[in-house]
Structures are given as C-alpha cells and as structure tokens.
Image 1 (tube, rainbow, N blue to C red):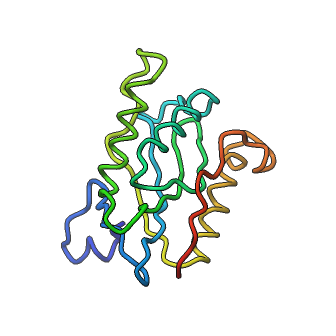
Image 2: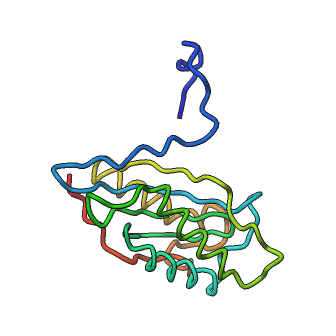
Image 3: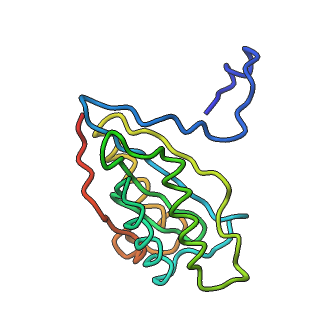
Amino acid sequence: MMGKDDMDRGLPKRRSPAHPAPTELDGHPIVVFLTVCTKNRRSLLATEQVTNLLIYWWRQADAWLVGRYVVMPDHIHLFCSPRDLDAHPLTHWVHFWKAGVTRDWPIEKDKPIWQRDFWDRQIRTGERYDQKWEYVQTNPCRHGFVERPEDWPFQGELNVLEWSG
C-alpha cells in the first residue's frame, strides 16, 4: 500500500492491489495472506452451507493449497501457498474458485457474490505468519460474534502450510 511519502513524490495512487508473483524462499513457495470480500460487503458467507461450498472449490482449485482460514459474514481471510513452484498465478486461482462458488451458489438473487479484486500479502517470516493468524482468528471476537476464537464455527485448516524460512 502506498504511503503519504509515495504520494508526496508524485507517484500515482494505486486503485487496486498489485498481486505480485509469489517469490521463492530457499527454493520453496512462500505463504500468502489473502482477503476476499463480498460485493458491497454484503453478509452472505458465514453459514455452514457456504463454508462447505468454499472448501469444495478450494479443493477443486488445487494448484494452490489453502491452509488456515476464517469465513466472516462479508469476507474471507485465508493463508495459501502454491502447490509447487510452477503453479498458476494467484489471480487465476482466486478467479477459478470464486467462479465455481458463484456457479453453485444456492440463491440466485444474491449474485454477483464477490468484489472484483482481492488483497494479498506475502508472509516473509514465521513470526509474521503466527501474528497474522492470531489477528485472523480473533476477527470474530473483535466483531462481537463470539467471545473466544475457538467458538467461531466457520474456520479451519485444510492443509498445514509449513513455514520454510
């Protein structure tokens, strides 16, 4: 994200995320922290049916592995990593599973489901990975949905993403 100093230097303000290609760390893909929101931030996602639909499409879109995730009413936070160093770009992967979820969405009048873009940040150290997970896991508490993170039913871990740094 551009700061005030960037704007003072005359650099253009970014209107959408840059989505840099995942870099390798010692020959291993790194972990990406991803946030995907619903269109107009509508509360559509935090149900068992939708969470199961997301999991189904994340498994179908297997060029990337989903690690820990939290499904909130209007957005999703997840950690992901390319299955191998030759994986499809992150933008293609996200487009694939968002399209699949939309196609299988149970309520036609809810469509379109997603904001056009998403936000991603590469996690560069194991400590940052743990810090981001703590932030993500406590998100339902900060919003007043539950008192303890473990009480939020719409979270989990599909794959253990080993930090290679």
